Amino acid sequence: MSTLTVDIWSDLVCPWCYVGKRRFETALAGFSRRADVRVRWRSFELDPGGGTEPVLTLPERSHRDLGGTRAETDRRMAMLTELAAKEGLTYRLDRARAVNSFDAHRLMHYADHEGRGEEVREHLMRAYTADGAILTDRDTLVGIAADGGLDPSQTREMLERGDFADAVRADERRAMELGVSGVPTFVFAERYAVSGAQPVEVFAQLLDRAWRELAPSAGDGVCAVEGSC
Image 1 (cartoon, one colour):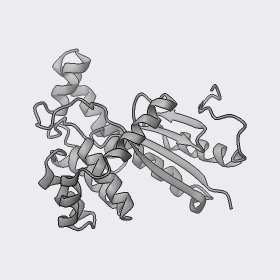
Image 2 (image 1 turned 180 degrees about the vertical axis):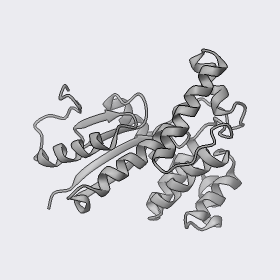
Image 3 (image 1 turned 135 degrees about the vertical axis):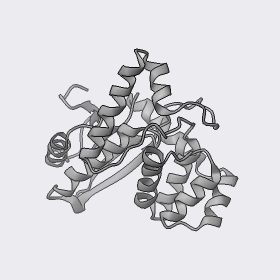
Image 4 (image 1 turned 90 degrees about the horizontal axis):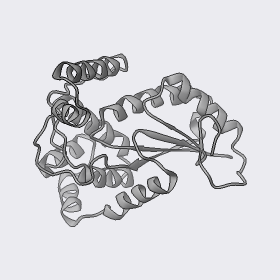
C-alpha cells in the first residue's frame, strides 16, 4: 500500500504556523485516504541567533523588524488574531515573547520519539500564542511536556543532556537543501511545496494531487504548487 508523506517545517514561536497547522488538519480530516498519509513535522528556527531571555513581545518584535507605525503593527496583530479565531484558536499575542526555539524543537523531537508529539506540539503552540509561555524556560517546557503526557523527570534529563540537537540540525539542513526559507512550509510526497497558512481548499487540492501522482518521480527536485521545479 502506498503512503503519502507530508513534511511540515514550522517554528513553535510562529503564530502563522499554528494557523497553518489547524487548516492543514482540517483538510487532512476530510481527505479520503487519511489513513495512508504520514505527517512528519520538521524543525525550523526563525531566529537561530535569538536570545534565551525574553526582551520584546511579539508585537514589539514585529514593529522593530517590519517598521511602520504602532497602529499598523496593532492592525497586523489584530488581523492575525481574527484569522486564528476563525480556526478555533485563541491568541493573546501581546503576551507572546520572542525567544530562541531550539530547546522547544528538541523537546518536540523527543515527544515524537515517545509517541506524544501531537499532544505536546499542540500544548506548546497554544502556550506560546495564548498564555505568554517562555519557551526557553526549562521548567515551562517540562510542565508543557507533562501536560502532553510525558514524564517530567525524564523530560528534564533529556533537556539537560542536550538530546535531539542533531535531529533539529538535520531538519534545518534539509530545509536549506530544499530552499525552504520561511514557515510554515508544507512539502507533499517530497515533491510539491507550498508556503504559508494556506486556505483549507489549497491543502485539500494538494493532498489530492500528490496522491494521484504518487508514482516514483524520475527527479529529485521539489516543485512549487504551479509545477515549476
